[in-house]
Image (cartoon, rainbow, N blue to C red; front, side, top):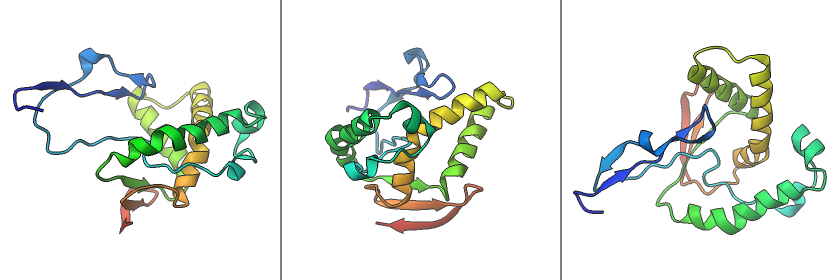
Length: 165
């Protein structure tokens, strides 16, 4: 990328759970020394098919009774995401202390974005949303990721340890 080249930097709107309109993407004039990509399950390793048999939550138990969703996620992680992750020079994994705090943190983000507490309906919708990511998140917390560094966080989001992998 040349010095005079302008690049629009994509943005994700968490409130709408979609890409922000291109008109809201900031303009960057290169060259870039580094590119930082933020992603919830960045670096996740595929699960073994045997690990997909038992449902991990109510969503999988009630809406994925045949395991099609679980197998599709595993296939995508293995076939498409592993080559994508391998293209990064480095991956840093911010490891939460437990799954329950991930839900609490996401709820706090939603409330900050809305500028108010979540309604019961919004909280239920968030709980459902979280279930889609629970299996992979728990898998990553047990060490199944391709991160070069793991930053261990406590419940207050303070760094307690940094490990080079």
